[in-house]
Length: 149
Image (cartoon, rainbow, N blue to C red):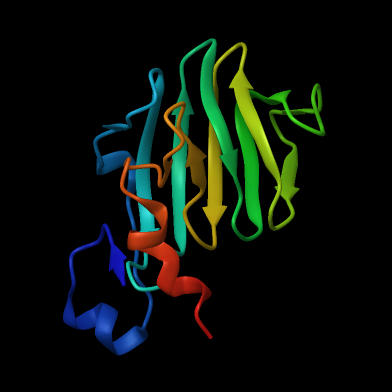
């Protein structure tokens, strides 16, 4: 499991891993206006917790939540721009979670800062028909193992 925290003997003894987001750099994503600080990432299962920062007007294109997604909005808002729940908005201080298989386009009209928890990375649907993960890698090749029982 990757945590963006240096390993130390204290962490091994306590099984607790302190992450200091204030000391981390924002990482650009392939989505314009969207940056992240990954707080926890398990490469074997896809479990991820991240701070997500969105510029005003930033859009996360058509994607599906493979498992439950949880988001707590710290600043700004997160709006379903397209999809079955079009128009639903979570504002600062609100929590929204999405069921497995939910699909939408997300939008941050005024920008935002969120704490997001994913059980498996989202599937993004490209215009050319490819289905990729947030990094642009083929979803089935990278994460298909998470569906094998």
